[in-house]
Length: 300
Image 1 (spheres, rainbow, N blue to C red):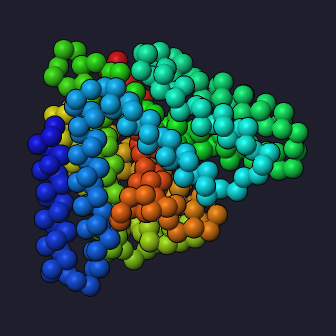
Image 2 (image 1 turned 30 degrees about the vertical axis):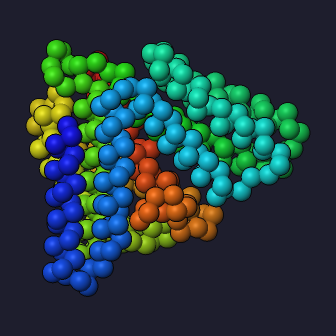
């Protein structure tokens, strides 16, 4: 696993450095900084995943907390939301308690059912009805996207090996995380060099059909090449790559729409070259849950 990740990062570094020398007009400074940041992030992630599940749970839990916190700093909130915000933050340790204890059903139902009912009730007790629906929906949406969806990264570690094969949850986790990033980089490079036809200029002006299709092609190819990390045959690996590319695209657009709505370019500057942490996990909010349930339905 470590060899695969290092090979991917070395390849990405070499390709972007070569393109930067050959085509300085492409202005690849941003993507080069992103890849350097990924060397650090990948090192931390690999260490946590390969050493101990508890470290991995802690790392993913920290990512969920920081993502939720960053989201709450950019959306409008009022003093009447304080109680609900407290309970929203509390969902992080509770959700990871269910995951770490192996209580899969509660990990899947806790936020979509119980938190969905509890947070509006807490908002009612605040006694403020002005924009009740909008205020409550903003908080709930953040919890679902940045706690529930991202916590699926930790749920991969609860999956055992598949039918006695040498691959299991850890390999599948690395598979989806790095294919998500391959899609991100592939879309950026092809969109920068070939992009002409914009997809949704009001939401994300830099997103083009050429970039989307380039990212999709690279991700499907990567999914097939890296299928030794999975129990997939070629067809299922290709379909997984297709789903990851499409889901990652919409996850990115979804967070872009939020930033556009509140009038910010980057959600923060937590990760050098990546903007805020939301700018780094946006695609994973869609790819992680989708891929998890795809794998679980087929093999567990």
